[in-house]
Each structure stands twice: as C-alpha cells, then as structure tokens.
Image (cartoon, rainbow, N blue to C red; front, side, top):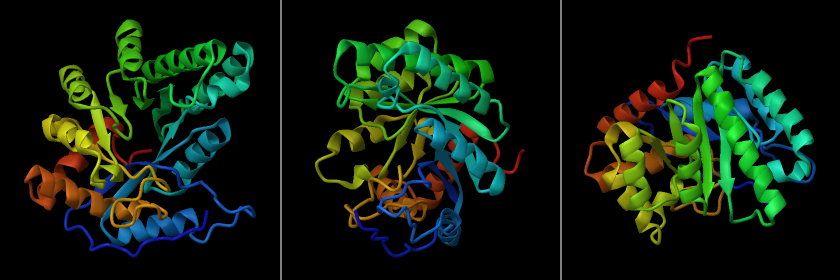
Length: 283
C-alpha cells in the first residue's frame, strides 16, 4: 500500500483530540516511513489538535505506545492485545504470559487505557480461537479495573457478546467503544450505561447511515472523535492514508449533521476526552 497523505484541512478554532491512532504502523516492505510519527504530530498541531491517544494492538506496539507517551507530551497511551492477536498465542498459558506484560505496562502513569481489546467475530473462527479471545477480553477488563483506567473496546460483529461480557464481569468506570460500529439499539445501551462512543471517519461514508443515526441519539457527553489512523480516512479522501491532522474533517462533518457549531462540538469532544483519559500535561 502506498502512502498518500491528504493535504492539511483548515485549522480548528477550538482544539481537540484524536481519541485513537496507530502512529507506529508501517506499510512498505522496507519499513520506511515518509512521515515519522513526531512529524505526524506536528501536522496535527498545525490544525489545532491538542493530542493523540496512541493505541497498541500487539505486545510490541503496546510497548512502543507506552514509550512514545514518555517522549512527547502530545501523546497518551493505550496498551493491549487486539482481539485478533489473542488466538495467535494458541495456548492460554502463552496468552496469559503476554497479558501479564500488558498489566505491567498499564502501571505506567501515561498509559491511560487498556485497549484496544474486545471481541471480533468477523475474522476469528473456531471454538478454541474464540475461547482465547474471550479469555483475553475478560483479563483486559480486569487490568483496566485494577488500574482505574479506561477500557477501549474493539467490537466487530460481536455487539451482544461484548455487552453481555461487560455486564457479567463488571465494566470499568470508563468504557469506550472505539470506532463505533453499532446501530441505534447499541447506542441506547451505551447511553444507559454511560459508555462512550468514539466515531471515526467512516461516518462520512454515505452507506453508514446507522453510524450517523447512532451519533444523533448518543448523549453529547458520551461522544468522542477518532481517526483510527492510518485507516478510515474520511471523505473525500477515502482510501488514502489517514492521520490525526484529518480529525477536523470528521469533526466538521459531524457538527453539520448534528446541527451544532464546529467550535461547540470541538469543546464538547475536548471535555469528554479529558474526562476519559485525564490531562495530557500530567505525568
């Protein structure tokens, strides 16, 4: 996949945050990066972005995320094994050892979430593989509660099972449905439980009316905005490389759809984000 970074959008007047990014991802076979992660952050700052939540999906990327948060005050970290990563360990003992390392990372002061974790029934098949994924999810929930930090959920074609797991084992105080993919019924469940819904650039795609309707009924204090970069670039740049500096495009689209001013929505997103993750300036 070739890197095709879109141009910078018009800067925001009121700054806000990218609630979910993967700044460490590499696409080309040589591992070269045409935009180093700190340059990526610099471009985000140019358009009014205040900070980024850098998210781990493997043990290696979680360690990198925790490290990056110590190197740049614009970064906070989330650490976890992605739901599709868990079955790759094949045996629960191996998986448990890896989760124990995630638990150690969670103790670092600039690690503010456990994620992305959850369930993914789109790619995972087989009774044993799904069992490992469920075990991993429950262990990550435990770590989030033990450290009193947010739980960042990856939920793909597993809405009912994710919700039932959270209710059965007990959800942390702060739960975020990353790259919200549900319909209005899930949004109502999130409203009832005080769970945050983080909307990405795919809300701009015409066929995703269910995402826009979910955003419409979501309680304003539970709405977040993210990129999931380098994936899910918003229209009109769909298919190109996403980056935190493109949040203003998604935010402006959301504001127009919701009938709000861009400044008011940005201020709300900023307050919501800091309520979930705390201050970026605090160690």
